[in-house]
Amino acid sequence: MSSSRKTPAALLRSLRQQAFRPTGGTSADLEKRQEFTIDELAREAGSTVRNVRAYQDRGLLPPPEKRGRTGIYSDVHLARLKIIGALLERGYTLNNIRDLLSAWEEGRDLNDILGLEVAVTSWRNPQVPSYVDYQDLIDDFGEDITPEVMTKAVSLGYIVPEGMRLRVPYPRVYNAGKELVEAGVPLDAVLTHVRLVRQEVDKLAERFIGMIIQHLVDDKYGENSLPQGEDVATLAEFITRIRPLAEAVVNDELGRVLEKSINKVLVDRLENVLAHLEKHH
Image (cartoon, rainbow, N blue to C red):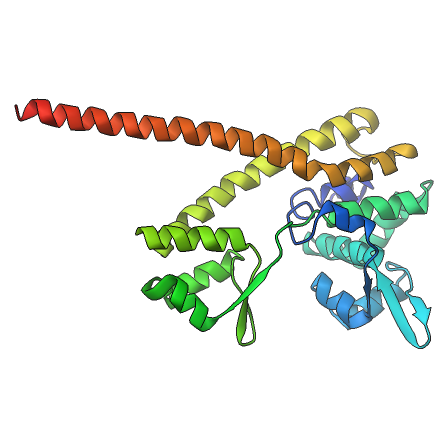
């Protein structure tokens, strides 16, 4: 592992692409303290009970609040667990992560640290997931919902099988696909184009987050450091407000480009029609 990856800044940088991606809830949810049993915590974080206990034993995860014989975990534990998981996926060992977290916590107020971790890992999708069964899927998309198309929809995360039902994390995308299919656009074509759009949106998000990190962290502390003092809490509070700011920019720009593209397509088509009429008269 390179020395640059062992700096405290790696803790935030390693999450630039992953932790800011939407996963459910709103910024207002950060004000509501969530509580979990160990099973619920592991499931919410995509981990296992065994891993949660192992991280506690190694000092990576703070102990739960005891209520009788039951340990109760909070959104603080969930945030730390997500950070651990994200760093493990990037090739860090548990010892590396412990060193990073120790360096990150050194000289900083614990409440500010936990607030930033929760903010970074809780920028979620504001839509409430809906559920459908397999018959609903057939009713909505008919013959378009082939096994191959189903596999593509699942891989994109728009349909999540859960036993005998299907979770739809993004109902607006589902309904948009349904309307396009009803209008005559094949579902496979819709998903193919959605995959291409996602690649461009990923790049847009990375540029936007990169801009924020550069001006709020890098320019002030350098590329191998993280915020100090009051700036930790300030950054955490700002992160919770990023989503509406980013959405406003993207929505306005998308609306502008859509109008421009639609007008161009319409004018081009009219020119072709006129040229065809002139050719045959």
